[in-house]
Length: 478
Ligand code: ADP
Ligand code: ZN
Ligand code: MG
Image (tube, rainbow, N blue to C red; front, side, top):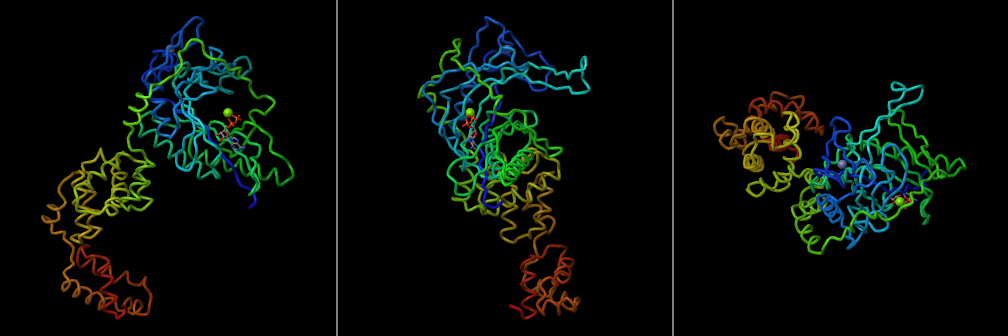
């Protein structure tokens, strides 16, 4: 096993969140009554003329720029010909030899190309339940036909399934923060095919690849790729070879089946679409779009780690969640708490409190950025302990308010007065002689009942680390 490595390249289709379709003015609508958003253009009636959607082109350029791509000064649309019930025109309008964007990079993965095209209609296979005259029946919904898509193709730079999933999550959050798509995998607005091969470690040539089609969750993508890598390695180790094929992964059974082998590969007979003008964005337009790009997850994460010194995990959580990041920055700007302390509150206690209260994000809660800044400051200054801070945070999330006023009004300030605390620790040691002996003998964990006594006496307001320090000092340990 150990001497094989996997090679993975991804092809991702993303539906762009425009109001209307790519080449006609039909409305985009997920979940509408089937076949109501159609017209002669997107149904492919002969003699109709497509017109490119300006917003889709703009989203396409934004996406390509966000992925670090070069923008082609001039590219044309092609007709990709094939026969299938999801395509009543008989061809899909797509880009072919020159894509809108090429040679980009996101994270550690190079982008081969990013091009615009239109989606096909949606087929629902009824299976046994919908048999007509003994054959399986399928339904076609042309509402989806003609939806603007950007297809993103990576170089084969990914080496394992978990990294493929993590990278896709970075891509999704990048596109969401750009606002070009909601990237909802269950609804099909982000769909991913994975190309997979294996080779012996150190081997420079790429192996024969298979393509795993249309997996509709991040978990299935990871599991599907893992299963296909295992299948290929097993095959080669048993003396077989990998044949080029398109595969389907069934998440329920974990099994892989061949959909199509190489002999049935399509020849799409691409030719230039004569009814559309070339895509030739001006340098001014590209510069304007580039200047208006928001700060994206990758850059934000790097800045948080590099400039603010925030731990990597918290930086990634904030990078992926623009609303939380903006809240964090607003609180940080008020001063009073350090970036890492604040990021810890936002990604830790606050995230938990929001989840518990059933809020989708901090925007739904009553907590203000100044409330969080003040609270984090109180804890950092040891005016209150972390546990009290957590309790106040839960209240701020549901009711809002000023933590400084709450602490004062309710006398929640931590007991850090050295004499008072010292006296309580003395009593705790006297009350828990067995535990005290065990701690003195080197058993750290035995400290629990002693700390518990102190917390009871102080109604939970003692500073935990300070209590532990006092106990150890009094037992002559430090
Ligand atoms: P095809 O001609 O079969 O469409 P492409 O060269 O266009 O193949 O690549 C399609 C996708 O497959 C890209 O994401 C690319 O990175 C990936 N890919 C190409 N060759 C391999 C390989 N040997 N192993 C894994 N992925 C590959
Ligand atoms: Zn239409
Ligand atoms: Mg290809």
